[in-house]
Image (tube, rainbow, N blue to C red; front, side, top):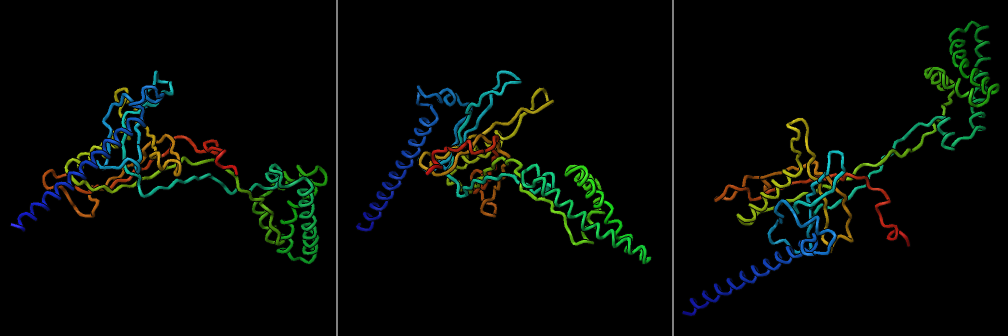
Length: 342
């Protein structure tokens, strides 16, 4: 009898624990739904955001179903509504997808730079080279090659035709450049030197052991649009979660793809996305601008082997990666200057 009572007691205790856990999960779910309602303006009649969020066309999606109310990320699906074909339109929220904050959180900023050979005139334009530098350089080069020209004359007298050809070819363009620099100034000399054959100049450089300074510089080219990649591996613990996971994957597919318009003459742009972290983490993370979803890759065998629910045939483990790209460039104007000052 004692054993039987013990078994009954353990059974009752187990039921009590399960009931308590169920109540906790229910309260978390309700709290999250309440938070979403407040956050997105659904319960704030006076909020300026209320108009944007109250008339969503699609069901909000949450995974996992017992997601807590602090460590989450909201992916807002935004539909651009235009008054006419030439209007920029406004973005309205049509659906919210709420997921845990992913383990891979990286934010990259990639200004573009190019190494350029400015040349003498480019360096002068940039203020790195003045007129006296250019004039002195041309005159020095001309003087050096004049010496080579004298050697060419001697080589002719001595019937050394190879030496005469080499020294004479090297002296020709440089002598012209030097003479023009002395007669017409820096600009004329530079133009004559710049107009000579690149092969001749290279040959003269090799002969004399003198290389022209290309005046290299690092030139700013622009910015790349930021990209954000999030990877999730979800395991459905029940048929209900399996359905919720399927809705999220199919919903992302739907909203990232275009639709035909004007018959099949063109495409209507896909929906856009705005991503926000929960208020607990947002001050310590980074802001994400309006995005497009460029890539969605899905692995329906997240465990590396086919694993499906026996009753429904739905996959148990699904792994997917979303790659978003912002539609506006990030500049220093996007930052709060106050947070950067001492």
